[in-house]
Image (cartoon, rainbow, N blue to C red; front, side, top):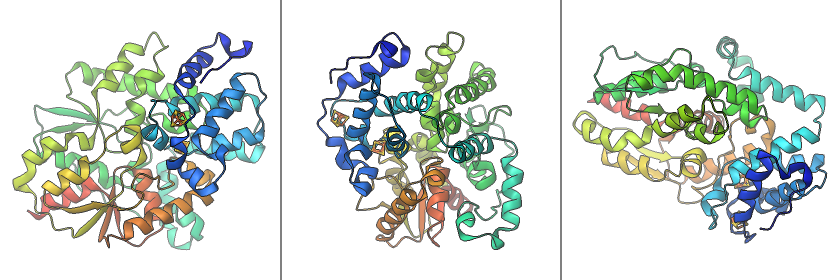
Length: 408
Ligand code: SF4
Ligand code: SF4
């Protein structure tokens, strides 16, 4: 796609990066067919091709409006369109640039600014845990809309005490230790059973995605640099990998190299961190080999929801089903629309609840066709969002493997 950058953007990093991405787009519209917001809203401007066009118009000098902002806001950043695109358009990086430039030119109403500020400062804050614990203690009294966002308290089980020569770093995440603490300890127990020690860097925290995607890109990058500083001594000491059990964090950390490429002080380290980062499911081939004789899989029919950040953002598809199947689990993805977003999408379910809940219910209906006893996923956001709409337990797949180890 030919783009004539306006003088305002011609010599800027954002302008040049966006132009390079736009140049690959041939405007074919294949991506529109797999876009969840286009499927629900039926408006070209709520699909990837329309959003790409809005960003192109902005870069060519057209003044963006609140309507432009709304169409970009409604994007889930699920990156389903990247999987579909035959031309390799990096839509995810383009929408980050588009949103930033629109927000710099279109002020948001005070109510919207307040909610977005509360989310970006509140979720990664040390105050999130005590606030959630208070919410959990009065959960039964909460109105339904709020109860949806406050999961019941969960016990985490013991952290393994053995040490091993083989070590991996793990990011605990910002909300996961409070919302579902068992996911992190189950990960450590499963890795321990395979002879791998899980190390956590005390000063690492949120991966930076929450702030970055709420358009505090500098705030997000500051969190990325803090994590790099916290992990670097462990990297130098020879950890094998930086393991992510939340695919939403993994997709971001794998992008540190790109996001910090213009930061001379951090670029080489960021690239190394991204190269070392693995979704937990990428360790499954080795885990299956090591754990096959220790696992007794008795979980019944399981439905797997592959998060967008796993199947589209990281382009990892099929691994969880294949390897859990090899361990003896009866696990299936939904027959229909397994590629579609569940509506969680980071803070999207708070900012756009109508779309988010429609997508959730559609996803649960598709998963329900397999009559699952348990639904599993690979990202805390998807797990909490899906759980808010069903009585069927929704868990991380590693918790099932952990349970199966205890059964054996
Ligand atoms: S599928 Fe790719 S090339 Fe075609 S319109 Fe969408 S982004 Fe552009
Ligand atoms: S990222 Fe998802 S919601 Fe956004 S345009 Fe692409 S397919 Fe549609």
